Length: 151
Image 1 (cartoon, rainbow, N blue to C red):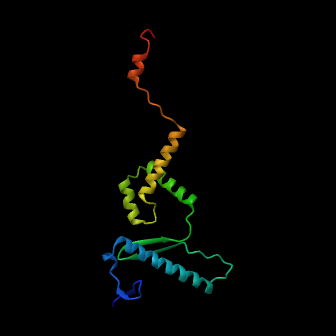
Image 2: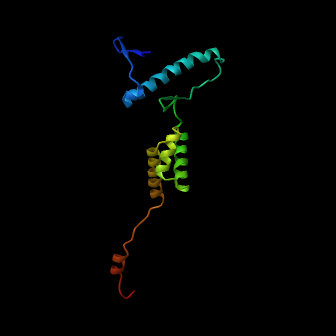
């Protein structure tokens, strides 16, 4: 069975397999599918829920040839996102979870925050702590030479 798509001019074209497509194309396909599903969902809720009910599609998860996709809908709550990153940074520090181990966890659970986001959170925390608790270095050798020998 051939999968046919239409290009911008409306002409039919055959779709490449996902694994043969570029990363950009894979992401565009995932976003396109998610957008169509969101529209279908919004049209369908009218048949199942009262118009006064607030029904929200939060996320869509699907897999293409063992590659997982997680698409979030709506605005992410920045406060919750920040709290999650701070919690993950805390767990990494307190429980001594190495970056490699965390990387393996993110391949299992794709909804975990990415490593770079946690690394950025670590850097933000360090900068904040430097402002709160300034650390001054003293060169003992120069301090001893400047002192009066009689003291």
